[in-house]
Length: 355
Image (tube, rainbow, N blue to C red):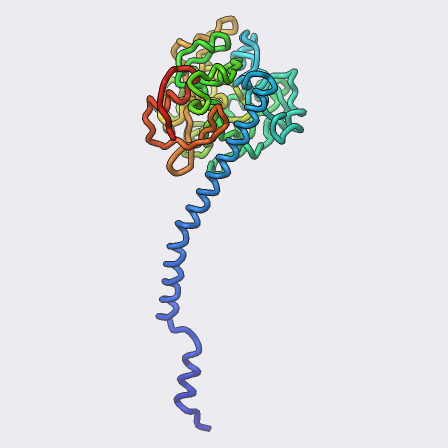
């Protein structure tokens, strides 16, 4: 039987030609390319909103703490006497991140925290408990990290120091514009002091620069691009086994690191504080460190070897902060350093705004 050429042509045209297929792929690729920035922008906006909400909740918890206790939580609550064993150089029971737990939805975790022991004597379960409110969705770092100093102490006595890793916090306590460390009441008179320091009970009345113009807590990303600097030479990145050490603060660790650990483990971020001594997003990140001069020697905030970490963020355009009045604002990367430092002090008499 003879088949018409028209029928043959129709049969042969049922599929795509190679050229047509390539055109379709090119169109799809173009559409994906157009949609991808929009998707990324939407994701960044969602991350930013979540981060601001985390800070808002932290701010509310701290203000509720203040309503109950008549002062904001201490950045680090402990003894003004130095520790006899010199492990960290001071006895700290708990910090602000732990103190506000009863004023959040983490009362059960607060019940597990043994207040008869220092923070580095808590259980592994408590130390490694990830608190969603303390995690910024834009930070790409690990949520549980191993700290070099805690690892060393754990290797010396796992009974006294039960854990070597802990859950991170991406939100750091504002220490002010100074780098010196001291216990209250000496801490209260330091130049450039912020709302939080060792044993310092700030009140809202003590924030004389204005609660709407004073940082309380700001971002501290733990993404691996934010590497840790050696405290003695803040431009030198600390390495462990030839790998850069990322900056990662643990919510349970409210204590700067003694400089005596440098020779043993290099350095760590040493506590969940940050300040404005250097610019926002400075890399490498400076570690929180104080000079340990012996178990019977008071901490000297003016001595060489005092360093304070810096705020940093993964959000495009700026870093989020919660202020002492509870509102949350974004500080642009290029903020003038003098204005930035003024916003971090509670009674420096500076003027200026980041918003």
